[in-house]
Image (cartoon, rainbow, N blue to C red; front, side):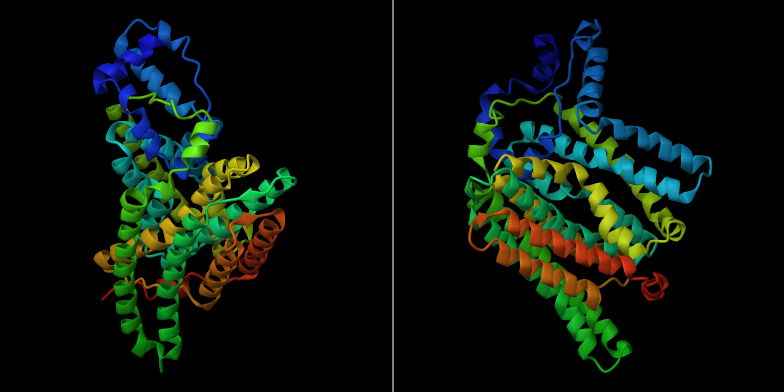
Length: 436
């Protein structure tokens, strides 16, 4: 095993002296994903005589086989074969969706590995931009095909999934598993995220209210678009301020140092080198882009074949499957009565999507000449508003029990049922997306 560590030491230097700094750079997202990783058995790999080949095989084993979801990697070549040989479009959609599941977890793993060498600040920035890479890539591909409704539905679904499904499951499972123990968490982190989510809700609500208060859609369309773009810039400024708050001025609120020491993760060291991690990250992003393109191209065919509305697939199925690894990790920590980590995953992801991914999509659409605004329509915005308010009330006292989680889960089921019966066609949104 010692010989396997030599390439990393030769390539990047001895890192043992900065373990404390690295420990401070880990986030709830990293810790959540790490719960689904498994220790690789490098006995056979260590017997390979050639250093370069041994290093490549080690990377392959750590990246591909170092997760409990490694079996799902088989869906990636199957999706590519299905696309190349003209298989049924719903099959391509389903296989691509399954293939995205382990890739999302591996991106988190690779950003954490790179953070070992760049330090906690750059590592935190990497996590802040790559934490929801799958949603962002799917949204950009949907934008390139002028499927504005798919973009809005998928991003809204990610927020609702984190706020109601993930957080609700964490509180419910944690409450059931710890019936005789008082469950507490740090309210300060939850308060910050709740404030940002309320700001995002205001930015979503104003374009809708402005459009509804106007005399006609023709007169309010352009002002609504301008208001959305201005609001998006404000949201991005707020998110940058949030990163400064999280990584510099109030880092202690987000470290969860106690949980790290209790789980025995304080002495964890990198298992692959910096450049190896960077190349794997680029490769994983390319594969995510390919599968995201398949998902966007085939989502309507899957909807027609399965008899399920595109809104339900985008709002319910896409977030559940795409973030399954991260969500499962958050639930595992809830069972261990480590709610600070679970809250960091659920609220952190919801905040990142609302304050970074959504406004970034508005700006990207603006650059591409596509008229995408923050008006998510009345039903969607109302669901988002009630979800954020419900979560804010749920987290206001700093304690938890299973009843809180059950209520959030029931809210998610009701919203899911609403979009299941909704049959709004996509063509209504596509006709108005191309800019002048």
